[in-house]
Image (tube, rainbow, N blue to C red; front, side):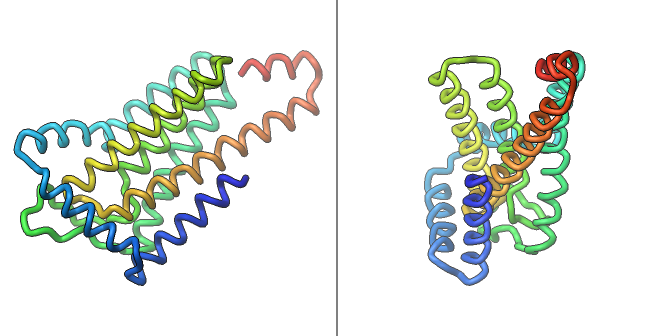
Length: 217
């Protein structure tokens, strides 16, 4: 619950900052300048390949595969949490984009040109939801705290990489990316916490045999 409150508060602060041209807006300009200076044709080619791994098509394909595996294994609670996270997160991203109406960066020599709203970054938010969910699923399968931490560290690193590619390409501002991360973490935490809370509530009210079967899902 604390994580949800902190991330929601952070998202609100980010949204207010770019609306009022606060100190984070300077980070938008700084990040854009840094990536413009290091841009090369070769690096741009690599970045475009990497950023595809955060695209709607790729995230949707992987999500469908994960959902199928969970259904085959009859892990219905995990399937429910995952489906709620990904489907609800997609809707949330669209709603937030249209709520804030923030235009994309306007650059002298843009590497990509998009006309949709930019805040929060869809690539980054989708990656946050997917990688966060995969980290939760992987961590639940092991007992080692170190390995669990490693799963979440890898997920966090990949989220940062995808977010960085969006800034590099000029598709998003820095605040679009960190706003997407905070919104994604908040929604991810809410969904998985809600489903887990419901699962535990049912376990306390079911017969021992049913409870044992549901505990395995």
